[in-house]
Image 1 (spheres, rainbow, N blue to C red):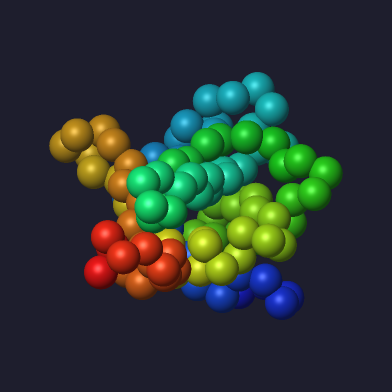
Image 2 (cartoon, rainbow, N blue to C red; image 1 turned 30 degrees about the horizontal axis):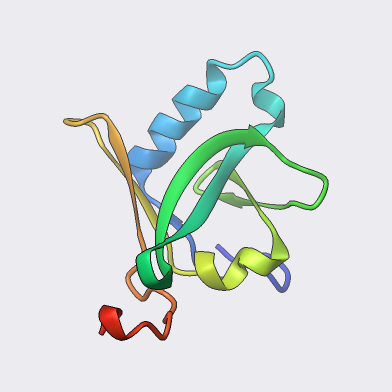
Length: 110
């Protein structure tokens, strides 16, 4: 999904969208909630991703991806473009993957 000048590609699979929608609907303030993908750096600057159900902060932009409101900040676009959010009903876990993770310049990641 692309917003005006923002994220170009974020994929939320149908299974992930259904589970996120159900989780958000359980909350009293569901009409204000969405998800935020959080990129954190680990050893040598490689990225790991997590997901949070939250309200938008004052600095967040918002787009709809597969019926789920996604919050992000302008400076996060490069780290988030390409992310795939999936859900495995067998394990009950979400997975977040980046098929082309941003390069870190770390000699250990090559």
